Length: 447
Length: 82
Image 1 (cartoon, rainbow over the protein chains, first blue to last red):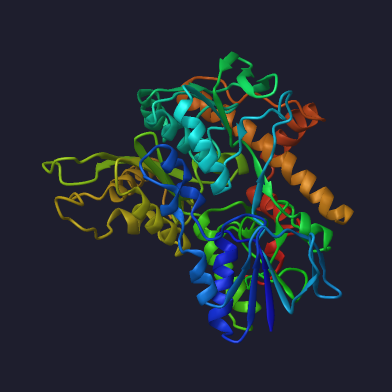
Image 2: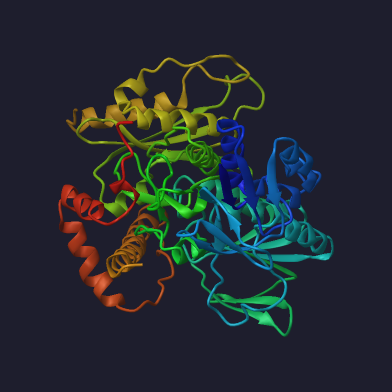
């Protein structure tokens, strides 16, 4: 059996490994248009910020590793079309390649802002590690940076560039940072810390043009012109579905490929995973698109296993998320207040504050927790948090709690770890849940 | 892509944008006493802001959910029950 995988990111490499493990005698071939596969693009901002000392640390394995495992990686090889009838890939400048099963993992692409000057040199769209290495050298001589887009990657970039010592400006048309994932009350501390790091926030500010003759030297916004030695653009992204569309595979309303729990597309011989697919949300059964690297990797494993003749299933998602933003960690799972309000999902909401370690143990930080629950059943439907530490683990836990329909009553009186250096007597999640229950009792609410 | 899928994608994109814009305005006012996002200028702005958003918000949640689930997508495939 010959399994072709197009794309060498988290989902593509996950698919290749799983396919090779599932069918040891299968011929597994990965096509990538880039120079490398299997690295962590999510780590790139932290190399720019010099918290990670080299880009090499972001590679999971070297090229020899894939050769030894029998995975044939074709670097700098562009697949330009898929011929499903003849089960062949059209490869630019090379003879066609046949396949028995195909896994599409072509990832995402940045949307180039539709403004004057969008062709100028010096605009950096962070994605490929080699281009990031080149960009990093430019940073050595740069003094001012503008980051377009205050969503997760933009906020990570702004923090990193400020830590690197650049005068950094963060431009976004929304009213608060991380508006697509977090609520305004949750990110207040984040915004303060970004400002303290030296990031100038330009919120409610529209990008109007990139200014320069050949290379960009400034950014024109609705609030004026900002000088820029470097410009990082991470505003909007979309699934890179060009190959899939041309092959006639079915797309959903999100613009992502329609797949089932086995990651099978509308063609029985084609699977897909990662940023090009859409998956249903656990709570609403409405498909969503553009999730995290961990989702991509897990979906890739499922796609690769099934393409190789195995049987593995993915599940509807409830999207635990988190990041370091400024000097704080912020994260959550399920619905935030803004998204629930936008969709019109009924909810009750409570907030609480606890601490990350015992109150007498040095270095404890506050943890703010906001919980959303179904007003009738009191089952948890969403959570958001900001704190100095312990956010990631709580986001994972709360994601599973949402999945398992855990109620506010259960969270309020949950058991928790108490150990002075890592956890306080009172768990912040429980404090928040107790606060919500108290509010509900005051208002006469009950499940 | 069929006309149905194109129409669904168009509806979802616009509905998502205008419902989020309206919600962000409310959240910004509630927590910051400030204005919402800078509005994008899109074709049919007035229809979406002055008709679609208020009408959507008047519908019961179950009806909104049914309408969203009626769109083509991965949720039509088998995802639950093994």
